[in-house]
View 1 (cartoon, helix red, strand yellow):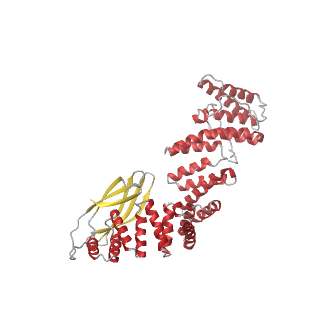
View 2: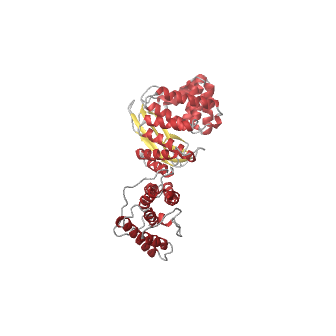
View 3: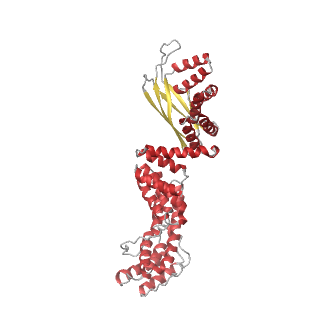
Length: 472
């Protein structure tokens, strides 16, 4: 994924001792090695302020870290004394040098409040102050991003908060914080930071990509929070900038449906499918191919549905949904030979599916394969239960299969009840080429007719593209 207004703090906390240990070594180490005079007209106009400025300058040439910290503490003490006891509250130089000292001590909050006051008192220092702010912001934000990429969200958020004290005129850190909160299932906090990022990025044409990412993510957070009206407005705004973004259009349709606006949801989805159908199907991703096929099937344009589903199967031979939809399309087309072939492949994936066995029998009946129909019927009536897979989710390094087993009364070819016993099922998670990358086992207990038993199997493996199961 991937600051125009400065926040003014009411006061600056002054430590009586004048000593402040470096709160963030990264911030302190990022400061220039050599002292640079202000790039704006600043005059100390006070002995304490002048002395502190000299001590600040000397700290850059200190021979040891201890000497440097001593000089910085002396400078800070002198400046706070000048401000609080020598009527220098309106002296921009006192606040400016206090901010510079705070940066060298790694104190982001102190630097922020002092720079803010200096800018208020002398706006000709804006460029100089913003240089220090932005360079310091980057020095803290970049390690925060590295920490987030390493999965260290707490460390990342601490660094991002520091960065936001230093500079608020860019959206990046706010978006990063939104991502960190979203990834830890805190959509309310994520929404706050995405909204802030969007507010910063929207007026600035140099932040177009950041604006778009913030808007899309904000809409998704509103969706998670069931703030559907807010989600609709945000997705519509985003689609005004990116009207062809299919993910955002799908998200808008989901939000419409969740808000009870079924007609609006259908209108968005139908418009997308019509556009997809007119495009080169090879250019569509798997989800869009399936959408085209489903829309064509529902409109009884079965030849178009067949084309889309066949391409989906070519993309992923282990996509059960693509094969199942293709089999039903062959049924509608009365292409019994293709139906039998496709149903047989489905049975390799889910041999205890009552629905797939019925599809196979219908194809065999259409081909007048009476003996095969009988064998399929015998296999069907002997099932002690049927497994229906209702969901399959794939992630970068994990996959989850969900469904349920429903009890049946198993019968032999003569119609006599068969004895039942618990059955162990082996689930194999497959990669794109059909290689088994993970396996899980579960046992279906003896079930009465109509009794349900949930199925939920997870695997930790990269590259999972499909599944199949078998009786152990």
